[in-house]
Length: 195
Image (cartoon, rainbow, N blue to C red):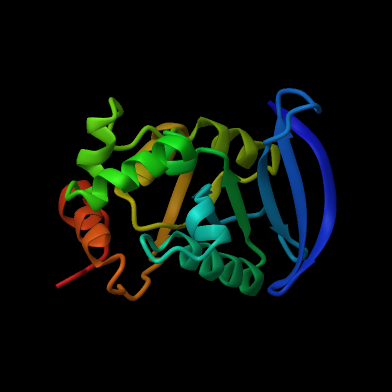
């Protein structure tokens, strides 16, 4: 996988260089890095590794906190000259079609983990090797990681990225996502401090 294209994008948070990463330039769904114009690789860099969530990121779904986390991450990256890496691994790696099926199972009473398992997947199918490839391409080795997910911290550390600080991305629970967030906290170990 390598850098295929790059352009400056003015956003509501400020100017970011959007860099597309893929094996081939013909790839229609590349991974992306949004690099703030004041980014300096000398660490530690504020970094969010965000897995695609079309329902939350694009349509503002209240079933999760993904869109709000992405918004907050872009704001922090703009404030601190950071980077947001957008990985194309929808639905914790199961894809949008299976995510919709999982939502239907959740409507029938299963939690987010049990729905994925019922469909034949692990609770979380994501991988972070691609994120590390992107970080290395950007000459980033020390980061302040914006996450609530301890598995992401462990995976990046095992892949050689030094995490100098975990920066929480806490979103206030709403009626539509309170059970989802509690499952992430109680069964997946996410650091959310829910009561």
